[in-house]
Length: 114
Image 1 (cartoon, helix red, strand yellow):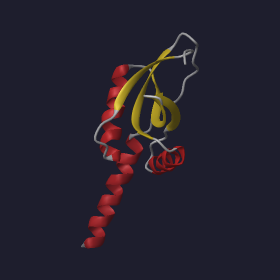
Image 2 (tube, rainbow, N blue to C red):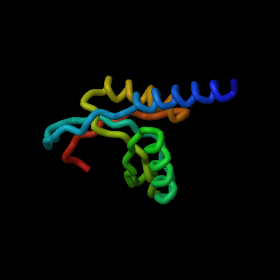
Image 3 (cartoon, one colour):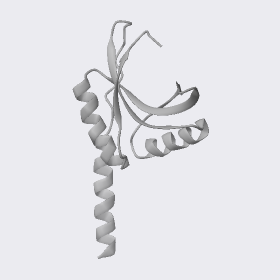
């Protein structure tokens, strides 16, 4: 009985894992605007990279981006490449549930600007 319940949980996890695949990266021009989903940020880059590896094992490929906030370096985990805010919001809702995060943010990015 316990084995059947465990197999059911594993099957549900595998199904959910396949759902959070981000859209494929399209060729970008300097005039394109894209949207990204910001998941979490950490002060240590090594820890951010470790969490990124953990998320990748759950089917969520992230980028670790170094940012400056209030004079301090932070390492933000993001998933980018969304063509619309609607797509980014939909993905944010899915990934928040899959990774059991309290909150995520959707960011607008204009390419060609730092």
